[in-house]
Length: 270
Image (tube, rainbow, N blue to C red; front, side, top):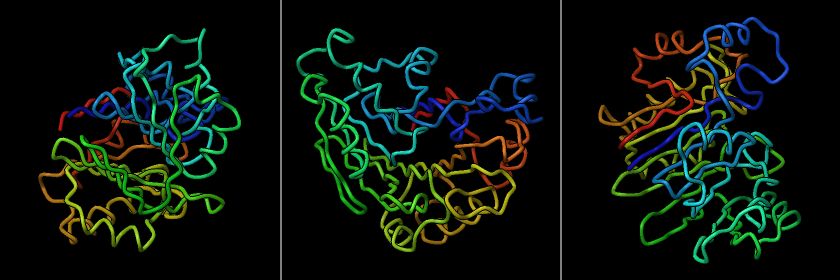
């Protein structure tokens, strides 16, 4: 089962859209894995987590056929994770899709309301599903459990546990230190892959987003619960230039703690 990280940055991208800070200048100079677009991932070719403003560009860069997507899970309504105008591009004459190319979209009530107001779902071959924390979405081939994040208090921001092909993936951003009920639910899973929010580098940030100290502690706590072990793949992603660490610096900082540093186009075969 394949996971492709389309983007791995925070909201502003890295280099930031209009930024001239030294960290963005260094990213431009170094290029490669230091160039980051807004965070999302494709799982098993059919599942997309978050629809960012960079989705189309990344589909071209990483050879992703977006017409094969059948399920879209949105974490929350912030524009770096949810760009609804792109869904209008599923309507003819912008796209000609097979009859069976229905896209099931899952998100909180704010997300689904926005789609209903802006997109002709019937013409776009979209089915909307409003979900809440601890809802369990079951299909024959996979199961997804929604968990509450610590992010934006004005909406129910969601994290996802995705069970597919006898593997379990925790998609754990955007979030600060997880709410207690999320920690309790995570005890029920063995995680083959755990994906953490590492927005603020070495900062002690734990509210809304996390930094390196918090994800190290989170990994240790999941190990204590038995949810991860030395077979689990732990990923750090969703980086901001405010964290100040470029790719090689992140690798050096996180390697002793068993983390893989995500970059745009990273492919995991689990």
